[in-house]
Length: 115
Image (cartoon, rainbow, N blue to C red; front, side, top):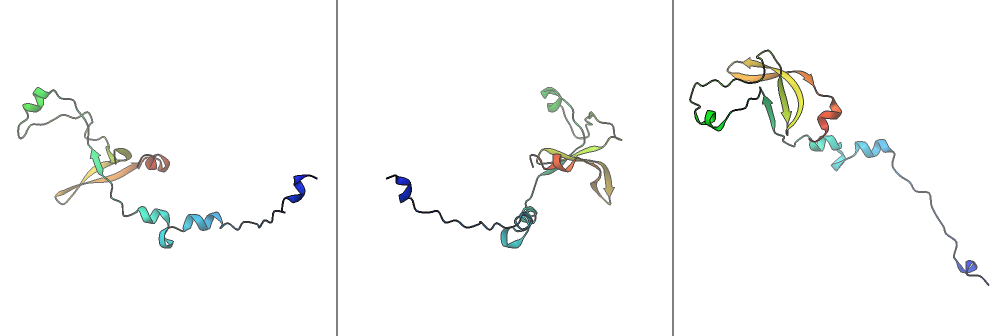
């Protein structure tokens, strides 16, 4: 007599999974997953240009000294978030404050990489 006759039959049920759209839209307490991240603070900085200086030149800096950068005044400035370039823009003055008008965004997929 073989052992196969002593094996009980397997009883199964069809699994019931939620639709993919339902999974994407639900998050913590029903909020979308992206909404959950909207309160995170990120470091944003604007790069006007760069230059190289010797330590001697740095030590000789005085008030009123002008440092020449590698960009022209008409060139766009770079906008970085957490050390990742996300946009280019132009400097604007609003009353007594500087601002940046965004003129060009890096592709959305590239912006999200590494942030």
